[in-house]
Length: 410
Ligand SMILES: Cc1ncc(COP(=O)(O)O)c(C=O)c1O
Image (cartoon, rainbow, N blue to C red):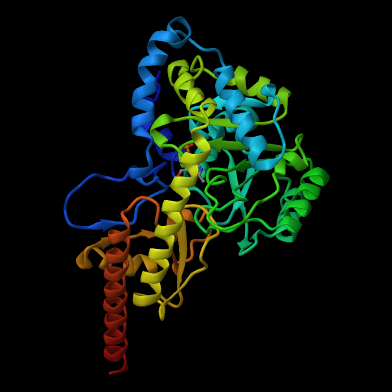
């Protein structure tokens, strides 16, 4: 009798996590390089003093409730605070049974994927999207299909065509994962007309829309997108987070969905709920009316930094790069027409700067011309200096290319 083959966990791991790394924490290194990293807030905006003053009160006054398990849906006071925020923002008040607190949006995506997806199901995503969520769907064994997007967001006609095509191929499409507000990486906002079209398609095809609203509060221009959830509560699961507005270290996010969905997601939890101690602290921040003024201060900071970034790009990179100033979010999505952003990115460290190439953000068919710059984290002076260095890397790339072309000519 032959020995059973030894189980090799590395193979299973490799197959399930073939997508890019789930997140890139910004390394704290002092090597003189300016890193245009990920979607991290400006550290000077963190409300450190307020939280430091309130935390002892939570530990002592909320003693019994703060120190024990809190139940699957999360502290009711925090859910009330989030409901009030969503009402003020979208004009549509969720009931408490429509809100589940999660460990950031990331856990919301994982819970939804675990609850809805069977291996072999298809999830449709925008062609460029947040790679962490694509990795989560793949870990559940899902296939990924994409739809293109433009300056007005996802293209509904292309989505419907894709759905027909997948249906003809016998694929089982369960979810559309989309980032309609201040998209990562492109910054686009789904137009109002397309919101209506998208909902109509979801209703026609029995499609669930999983809306990632990570940047929904980071409104830098006067843009007030209609809530998809308000348009069709039975077809939309909306994921929100405090990571971008207060700080990712909180790991506080939420799912807003129909009560029966919330019940299912709660039942799929295996972590005995998130952190009551922290929920009570954050709830106090919201109840004390701190969130609104805090957010306004943070948005003022991001508006200033975006202006610095755009001015620096115009001064140092404009002839070679194209971009659209985003109405919100943390990113500029740039096109290096006719160039290869990965190859150019390799020349950047020699000029003292590191960029994020666009490749990781394409769920399928990566296009080499694109890359993303984040303006949220770095101080304004470093943003300006980083873009100046990027301009030098672009010049170096072009010089190398011209030299290679000259050699090829003879
Ligand atoms: C589009 C998008 N979704 C989700 C996340 C992760 O959010 P959270 O910290 O709430 O898990 C990020 C973080 O960069 C993001 O950009």
